[in-house]
Image: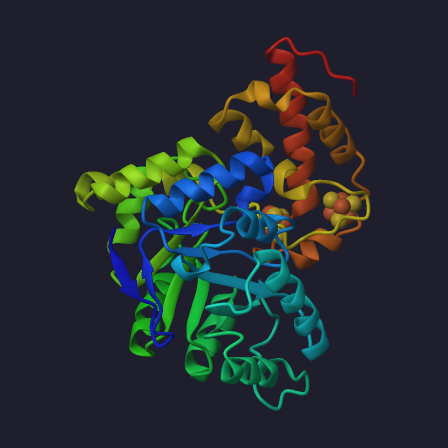
Length: 344
Ligand code: SF4
Ligand code: SF4
């Protein structure tokens, strides 16, 4: 499997790498099997976060005794020194390790800098000196903030949404990272599961030789598809470019990426799933969304009080309550057409 250096972090990681957000949704034993298979197939770089509920725990369980074979990255939303210290302590314990190869500021609202009054950057610099973390990264969804992070020279890596729907400016960010000797980690390579032409998505990544995609995997079938494509990477040619354009046009611009930054919702609405339910129903077996748990979730969605908390936190500035309302309506109509009785 191809390996590249992740900028000045010096970490030599595989392309593809493993994004461990979706394994939250896999049952524990299945998640462990998926992780073992990924490692056995040669993937060495696994990216998780304290925010991803039991993802770190699943990684720790799967890779007990195998730490030396792994490059592990995690991240913290901690707004200050104390918040990050608390997160890191839990992450190390869940992952069953005493160091992380990469530790990232998770989608901060401003670029953490020495002397900014939060103590965040100073803490990570101290931890790096002590060897508790081996490199410092930053993740973000804002192009402007990511650009500032690159210019600052303070970070070994940048993690940013990057896929065949990325704009020219977003693609330029990958080149800016190369020039700054920063590793570029591509998250949301399938845009939160909405791009279903996986060969086109992989071929797009192949155009950027300094970009490391962390494909979010939650099932063995998905993993197998990425592993097969890694063995015989599809070429980026005119046909593939046309497929990418078609995928982009099908999505439009007002769509939910499923990132979850709009949470929590005071009504306990599962926004990342509800705001894209119409697409989920049509890209995966719809019968999986007919159980009582999904009916309950959809009914809760119908109880949105329009408080606006979610849209104020959405990095894509989506009108989230409107998206939820239209997706709940679509769900009802879809299920009626399929002859499924709804309790609401
Ligand atoms: S607007 Fe609706 S979905 Fe958004 S946070 Fe408020 S209640 Fe939840
Ligand atoms: S509404 Fe926005 S913040 Fe919430 S999951 Fe979708 S894209 Fe992410």
